Amino acid sequence: MTEPANDGVVVPAGSSALGEGRPATQFVRPTFAGLRPPSANIASFEAPNVPPHPAAQRDPSRFAPRITQRRLIASGFAALCLFATLIGVVVLAALLFDIVRDGAGKLNWSMLTGFPSRFPDRAGIGPALAGSAWVLLLTALLAFPLGVGTAIWLEEYAPRNRWRRLIEMNIANLAGVPSIVYGILGLALFVRLMALGRSLLAAGFTLALLILPVIIIASQEAIKAVPRTIRLGAYALGATRWETIKHQILPMALPGIMTGTILALSRAIGEAAPVILVGALGFVAFIPTNPSDQYTVLPFQIFNWVSRPQTAFHEVAAAASIVLLVLLLSMSAVAIWLRNKYTRRS
Amino acid sequence: MSDAIRNPAGPIELEARDLSVLYGETRALKYVSLSIPDRKVVAFIGPSGCGKSTLLRCFNRMNDLIPDVKIEGEALFQGRNLYGAGVDAVDVRRRIGMVFQKPNPFPKSIYDNVVFGPKINGYKGDFGELVERSLRQAALWDEVKDRLQSNALALSGGQQQRLCIARALAVEPEVLLMDEPASALDPIATQKIEDLIYELKQDYTVVIVTHNMQQAARVSDHTAFLYMGEVIEYGPTNELFTNPREERTEAYITGRFG
Image 1 (tube, each protein chain N blue to C red):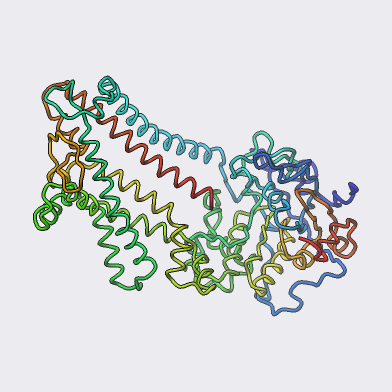
Image 2 (cartoon, one colour):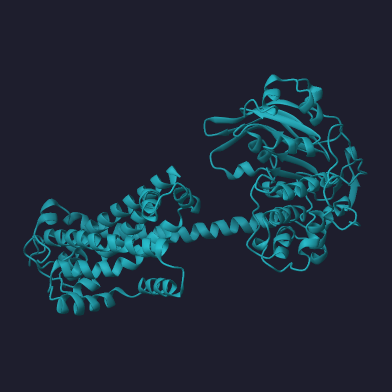
């Protein structure tokens, strides 16, 4: 199978572009004046009778690397991954195209600021947009401090025992509870028991509960990602735990925390189910001005219009969907921008 | 520097010809030419950022994995350009193994760490024998022979590094590149790695990057001193350390800068 080639290199048939290995030759240990012989002054760590170095019998025929075949499999896998990506992109593009085709014609200033109406041509999303903004603000104000506080306590203060594990496990489970269940909880707790009624505040509380687990988990991950050496460095300078958190850990974790929070808030303003349960209205002819006002939100307004029989209302719903999508995409864009800024710095 | 010094006697295993590496606009390695003889230990020394790791990584195309990197010139392995047409980086890396600064065993058993490379490369022999052979070569066998199935991360840093060497040897490479292999280890573990390097050059060409000049003097046959992306001086180790030709080499090895 092998034939001797120039300078004594043995090249087996069908060898790669690199050729195959040199044959082993007799080794003569070189000596340099001034260099100590290794192992001369340290106890031997090897068995005295080491077998001869096996690579001296190095034999490429023991391997069948089949590079071409492995390359093919590798490209196949890459193509499969690209295909999976394309499916998502194509579906999303089709969705966007469909919505824009239906709704772009209805999109104008009076539609953005107008009030709902029985007549599709006059129907606007002003109150729904204002309601969504209010709910977003209230949710963020409630969920951010609660979530980050919980994450800091769990990561930095809580003793590492079974109770902490139990709490963490429950938080993770809560992140998977369907949003309608939070709606029922909000109805019983905030609307009835706390007598907040059909107010923006009740919706804000409910959605804050809904996204709290997500914010906690994202913040915990961000805090965990701060290297241990940073903490040790701060403690070694005599900083208290609070000083370490405030000056070192939080600043490093903040972009991650913000990213998680923004994505969670995006989810909150896209939710319709829980706000329907806690009493969002289908027809609101005023702009809410304080947290105890009645309200509606964009997703519910869209849902309301889509369920009407007139196709003209479906077009208004598509236009409102564009507004909601733009809102969500800009929130995601901010999250991505924050993450990139963070990655570049570290 | 004369050609005789750049080109040591004996068969040449690796060679750089006007080799440059550009990271974006910066030329991290500037038109480097040098030859590495077969079955010898060559050390690259120089201050941080001088390009010695970059040069090392050219020889098994690890620089390919860095985005926005551009390589000019030639890196030859047994006379063939590693960056030539038809040369597969996967093939190159099996033939030219590498050990990194920090031990990076896979979070699997000791046995699995050693057999991963041979498995993907279609090894046809007996795996148990291969594992023993590789671990013996890396002077680790006696310490781990009774716990081959335990997790590699449970080993000490020095043992992990020798496992990484065993793992690299298991695919029967012809060259072993070592990027500061002992800088994260204690003196005893360092000594073991150094003794190992001395043993390995019976069968392998070893190229080692090190910050430790005593280490370079102890283990290497030839030493290259790099500074700002250029090879300032290259020659037999004892000559370079006892009688450097270049002023900058002398300044560096006597600790006046770097």
